[in-house]
Image 1 (tube, one colour):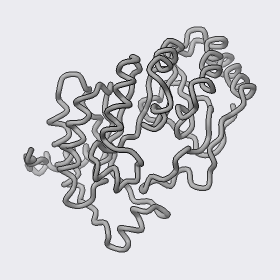
Image 2 (image 1 turned 60 degrees about the vertical axis):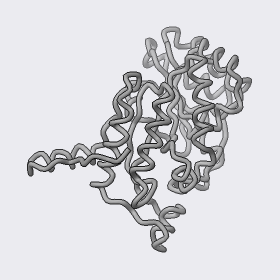
Image 3 (image 1 turned 180 degrees about the vertical axis):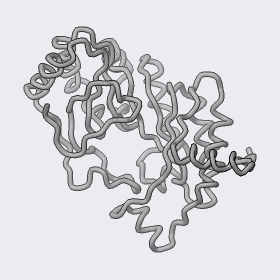
Image 4 (image 1 turned 135 degrees about the horizontal axis):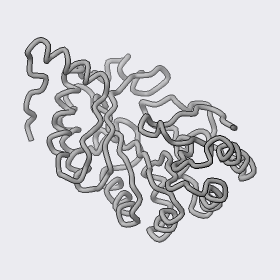
Length: 272
């Protein structure tokens, strides 16, 4: 198998076969991320892709799901993505779905009819790092799009029947902004149809803008207790019946366990 650069997949894709389609990130400007620094975006050749498919076929001929690695393989245009997707079933005849990372920007370059055709070819399961649905938080994070962009582009996925998952990041709004971020994000997410929402907690990494802002006291971190309260706000509003409950991060599970042992209430009500 050929893999280059940073290669990873979400924990919920643990049972999927992975194969490289792209390396690097097309954007690389998120203020909290240094994962793909100094790594240019590129796509692999169709020849290399087929070699890896042949190897997967030899080891797991009955594979039912394939995860394409890279920061955002869905950035490829419909015409560039199409031959790779069509090739999958030449080797893995039982493959039912092809998943990958995607950005809101990656959906913008595709029409609904193209999304429908990709769905018919097996593309289903886009992991989208929205991180937030609040405009102020999105701007602070340097995401390069707005809540309205998320709404418009993901409605195209809903129309095309493509399953997608959101990532929400607690702590991203900084101290004092968590509740507003959670409420606005939940209200936006509830207007869409993500299959589920995965929740992460912000970690400040060196060589990122948020790390520098925190070092200069321009950005104040909110504590883990406030992270939990923000999560509670998100949880309460997202219980709309059509969104799976957010996956609880390990740090929150640990915190809840401590609170339960001490007989404390881990959450306080948030103002809506």
